[in-house]
Amino acid sequence: MAGQQGTRWPLASNRIRRGRASNTFGEGIRVQTDGSRTNHQGWDFYAPVGTPVYAIHDGVVVRADGVSGAYGNQVVIRLDTVTVNGSQAYAMYGHLSSISVAVNQRVSRGDQIGLTGVSGNGEPDQRLPNWEQDYHLHFEIRDRQDVGQGMGGRVSPATLYGSPPLVNTVIDIPAPPSQTPTTDGSTNAAE
Ligand SMILES: [Zn+2]
Image (cartoon, rainbow, N blue to C red; front, side, top):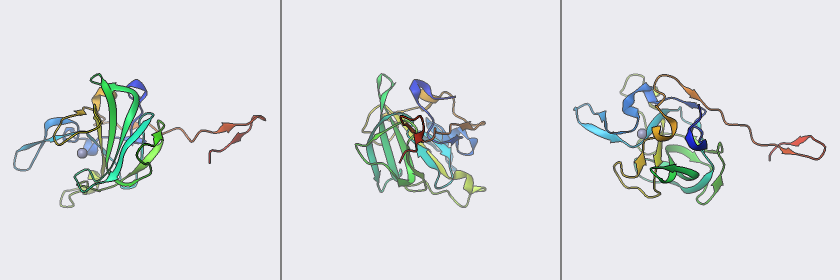
């Protein structure tokens, strides 16, 4: 169950945080305790701190930084050949604990680009029951490089992945690092 246009999933094990629709994409999809509704710009995947995150397609890193905003440490990749709404697509990963790529670096589908964390506003609310279930990767698909607040430039990840994994976990383990064949037919492990 790969994504469309040759994409893979951002984690090895992909399931929406708490299996709740409120952790998927949409305007007004979140209901606050006071009854008001807020937007959510992407999908939240459940992920304990330190879970590896992967490039969903070949591309170029256009952002890799820690900012004092809601997203915390974030990576944005411009995806080769992938389009959404007729525009080149971008994948964004938020609340990371560490980043292992740099701006302008080329990445290949399945490359590890960092680890999940709680930076920005990703810290679970420990007053909630089973709060450990709120550790997550915030993941967006965008149709432009520069976005502001709100929903502008964000596209539902369902555009690439179909319906969100609310009930079943999607397993998408990356291939091991490639091995270089030698003339005698044996292989050298990648360095
Ligand atoms: Zn989120």
